[in-house]
Image (tube, rainbow, N blue to C red; front, side, top):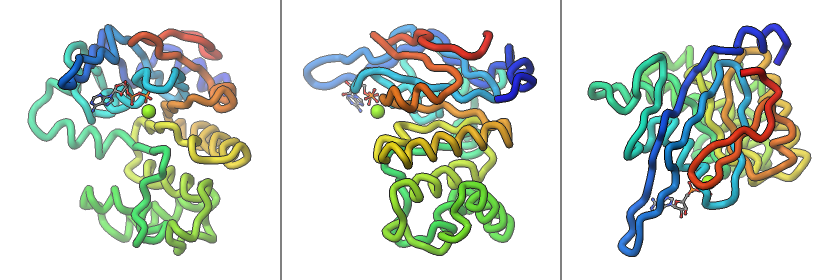
Length: 241
Ligand SMILES: Nc1ncnc2c1ncn2[C@@H]1O[C@H](COP(=O)(O)OP(=O)(O)O)[C@@H](O)[C@H]1O
Ligand SMILES: [Mg+2]
């Protein structure tokens, strides 16, 4: 991120978790995963979330992305609590404002890279020609120009994740949430993916939240917070809040 962008984003909060509680009830126990968790994601930043396995990183991403309602607290987006709006809001929020990338890519095996990247736009009833044009553009951006018509089984892990990244960006989300996106990649492919994320961040001012347990990845991000005992705390910060 340039110094200029950095200055502009100083106070602009894109999405905020306020005093979020989330627990899971099993027949044997209640697991308190998030307890009064607070987090601000700034517009235009690449934020890393680290934490031990099972601490609740995926849960936090799901709560932030409108996939899982917390027991208490709020997720504020554009000044509104996303879980307290009228019917249809959440679906529109997820499809229109949020992109997701997962550890195991989750590409559909029978579809080409291009078709996979187009899919979220088609689900939103976007014009198929426009969806195709944008998917082609994004696949070029992520370095997959010569692999567009390949199926997932014909792609490496790093290539598959770059297709998943293009798919996550197809609907021009305000925020891209990535859950261990490099967890299935070797160091070289991991470095390439993070470099690509940083390029997309700079070119489009795209905001990213990246969950990772890798110190290597965390070291490549603007700001890193750690999830411990249900709460988030800053562990490294290149931004002035
Ligand atoms: N649907 C669920 N039902 C019961 N427990 C769950 C469920 N999802 C996650 N958990 C538990 O909540 C805790 C946090 O899980 P998760 O968010 O997946 O952690 P992380 O992504 O940091 O590894 C773990 O102890 C996990 O076993
Ligand atoms: Mg997880």
